[in-house]
Image (cartoon, rainbow, N blue to C red; front, side):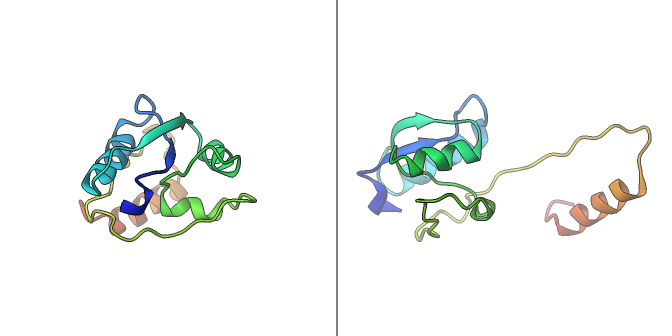
Length: 115
């Protein structure tokens, strides 16, 4: 992580996702630097496209690996803080709940450490 200290960064904007943005900034500070933000983007595909255009590096969730973009290498980082997680929430209309939604919610609840 500390090896990224001289890089320019493409980040998710604070206003769009304050939790993710704050945790990424905190991870950089814990590694001993404040990232130089060159560009912000709201969508993961846009972030990856900006990285492909050589605008900087980006810290992205593991799930972004499935979004293969030519010219972008996804490398797991060493030295990331153990507490680099964020909470997700689900919302749905209470009326007309279908069996598929109920099954999905049961699965999510079974995987969640905060039951």
